[in-house]
Amino acid sequence: MTENMSKRGSAALAGAIALIYAPALVSPVIYDDVSHVRDNPAFRLGLGEFLTGLFSRDYFSFASERTYQPLVTLFHYATHDHPFIYRAFGLGIHFLNAVLLYRVAQRLTAGRRPAIFAACLFAVFPAHTELLDFSAFKGHLFAASCVLAVLLSVIEYCADKVPPSLPFKICFFLTLGLLSKESALVAVPLSILYVVLFARPELPRLKTAAASVAVICASYLFLRFSVLTPPRAFPVRFEYSSLESFAFYLRTLAVPYPLCLERSLPSGPFWLLWLGAFAAAAVLLRRSRESLFSLAWILLALSPFLHLIPFSNVSPVADRYLYLPAAGLCLLLAHNLGRSPRGALALAALLALWAPIAAARNLTYRSTRALFEQTASCAPRNARAQFLLGMVCFQEKDYAASRAAYERVLALTDSPGARAALADIERAEAALR
Image (cartoon, rainbow, N blue to C red; front, side, top):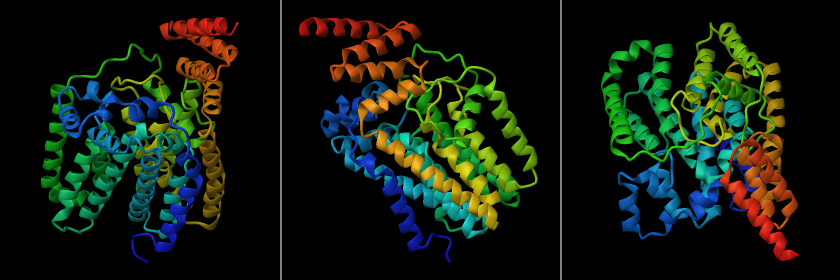
């Protein structure tokens, strides 16, 4: 068996992804896909005018984005009128990422069965539904592909495989990743960690590639923070600490249920439990380089979303940020359980649990109101969750439910939009009377 998955295994993995995500291919266009993809005014421009705006200093205002992702913007320019195409393309990239993770796992675990479990667990991880069902978040998907490709190229380069193309591949995929999402920078510390843990004698051979990577990162950071006009700042500032956000992500990785489109962190010292569990895992598994690498993968992949550097978002945490960290979790589980028959049985049971959760979640996206009702229920202290429900209820002329939702918004925050919506409800009800 070669390092690549067999044709039969690849077909089975692709079929499982297609079966679980089939409902998402024909779901209505909602949420951020409406404003950022379907109705984005930049996508109605001619090609020349669009490219001028895409590569201008005013990219953020031109593309209505808050992170630098021109590759994603260009993709949506070509596909924004065809939701089936951009959704199907996203599932194809997800399949590719599962295969890339299989190859990484095979290098780390030196076994085919653990690698297969890592790929399958990653393919059906329930929290991926938010990222894969909304094309507006495709930057995370593209960036993850590039991070995995960079890491795999580094692994091959350190394994005495020195074709001239490998340093070029490292630089090429890193550049593509940075043009897809800023979080692609994670590829650099992740690759460094791999070399330190597994290939330290190869450090001298990596000097040229490392210098090229440093130039790419420095050029990108200069462009992003010194050349481009910054995006408009959000007025919202989260009162949660980075440790609380990290603990929440650990909890959702361990128990990816219930899934929610908007989030509010639970009150109380819950986060101490999950931080303690993570620290205990690091102590117990400290003798295994593969396990330590997987745990560090989770931490590094989450670091861009822990508010260490403030970034713009309405919710303090989001399920879509777990896409790349979940790969680290799947590697950890596969390495420690995938070798023994009992461990393999446990992983098979986990697959049997995760797959229907993901499938059921995808069915929720078929109904806009059902999705927003579930969102408002699981995030009662999130103002945007209540606002979305009020909006869809108003569109369906359920004015009582809409009023109740907007009143919950005002109980949480001072929202001029909610007050204007309540006035609209009064006028609509007066017209009916």
